[in-house]
Image (cartoon, rainbow, N blue to C red; front, side, top):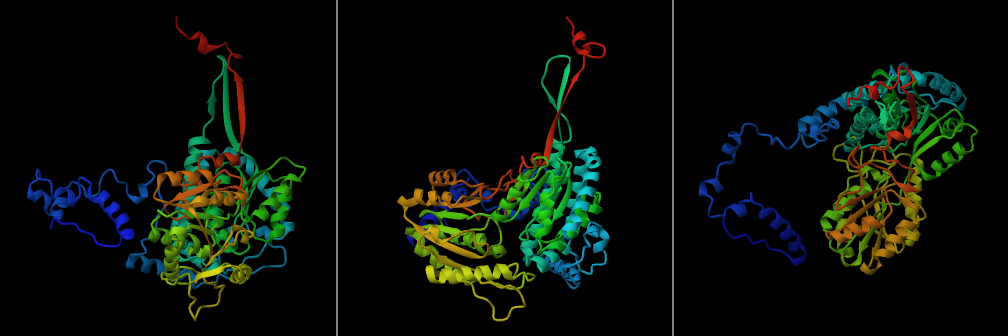
Length: 590
C-alpha cells in the first residue's frame, strides 16, 4: 500500500494531518522508508521480533527506567499499574486487610493531648483518636524547644538519611495509607497512590537538597589570613498546619522540610483527617525522628490559635484558606517574641484560557481532569474556563457529553472517577452555590448521581455558563466549573479580570499558537502555568508548587528554594593568622 488518504471534515482533518505529517515524516517512519529507493526491500519489511532478539539489551540505554527518571537527583517513587489485573487484585487484598479494621474518629472532651506524640497511642489500631486541648500546647512547645538544639547539631546529612528512611516506610505501608486516604478523606485509588508517591518524593527531594546545600559550610571570599564561612541552622520550633485535601502529601512535605532543616516540629493536621497524619507521625518516629522533635497534636482551631500565638514558636508552615492565613499572619505579628516566619500556601480562583486554535478533544479531557477529579478539592483545580466564542458551542457540547460519563461513587472502587466531598459543611456550601447559579447562570451539564449510594457527602459535578467573572465572590472549593465566553479582541480584558481577583495560583492555557501561549502565560500573574495539558498534579522537583498574591507567600513547595525558608544563616569569621602567623602566605614560593 503506497496511498495514504485520511478522510474527514476539514476542522477535524487539518490538525490530524499535521500530527501525521510530523510522525510520518520522521526518518524511521514506515511511510518514509517505503519510498526510499536506496533501502533494500528486506530492510523495509524486516521481522521486528528478529530485530529485537538481535539486540544486546532490549531496553534503550538512553531511556531511563521509571525509578531512574530523575537520574542522580533522587529515586522516583513507586506507582501502581491499575491496568494490570494482578497488580490491582494484590492491592485490593492488602487494602481490605486495613479496611476491615475500625478507623473511627472520636473527639475527646478531656485533656489527653500529652500522650498523642507516642506511637503507642495508635498501636492497638482501635481508631479512637483523642483531640488535644489548648492547655496541652505549652508543655508540647517546652518539649520541642528542649529537643531542638541536639537535633540541629546532628547535621543535615544525618537528618537526610532519616528522610530517606521515612520515604521507604511510606512506600512499604502504602496499602494501609491508601486505605486510610479512602476511608477518612474519600480519596479514589489513583488519588490515594498519588498521595503516597508525593509524600515519598518530598522526603527524597528534600533529603537531596539538604545534602547539597545545608550539610556543609559555604566558604566565602576574604583577605589572606582570614577564614569566612556561612552555615545554615534550624530556626527553632516550627508549627506545621496541614489541610484535609492532601492529608498525607502536604502534611509530610511540610513536616520533613522543617525537620531536615534542623527544626523541631509540632504538627497539627486538619480536623477531618487526623488518622492519616498520626500514622505518618508514627512512621517518622520509627524511621529515627525523636519523639520530642516531632509532636503530633490533632485538635480544632483553638489548638492552632494557641500554637501560633505562643512567642516561643519560630515559624509556621500553613496550607489552607486565605482567611485562615490572614488570621495566622496577624497573630504572629501581634506577639512580643522574635519575628516568626510564615510559609503559606492558600487557594486560587484558577482559570483556563482556551483559544480557537485549541484541540477540543484535548481541552475537554483536561477540563474534566482539572475541574472534577479529586472531587474538585485541589487548591490547583480549575474553577473558571474561558472559551473563545468561535469554538465555545462545540466544546460545551463535548463537555456536556463527557460529564455524563463521569462515575460518582465509592472511592474504593477502581471504576469510580469522583468520590464524596469531605464533610457536611462543604456539601452545604456547594449546594448553596449551585442554588444561586441555577438562578443567575445557565446550567451546562451535571454528572449523574447513582440512585443507590452508601452514606456519605455526595455531590454531582456541575458546570455553569456565567456572563461575567464578578458573578463569583470567591473560590468555590469543589467540583463546580464556571464557563465564560470571550471574543478574541477581549483577551486582554479577560486577563486583567483574572489578575484583578488577587489570586495567583494556577493557570491553564490551551492554544496551538506559540505566540498566544507565551503571551497569556506571561501576562497572567500566577505561580504555576500549564500549557496544553491539565493543570493539577504538580510533581515534586519538576513543577515546584505555590502561588502569589492571595494564593500564598512562597517559596514553592518541592522547589530548590523551599528549605532555606526554614533555616537561619550564621557566619563565622576566624583570624587564621592569630596563631603562628599567616602560614599559607609564608608557604608561597617566589
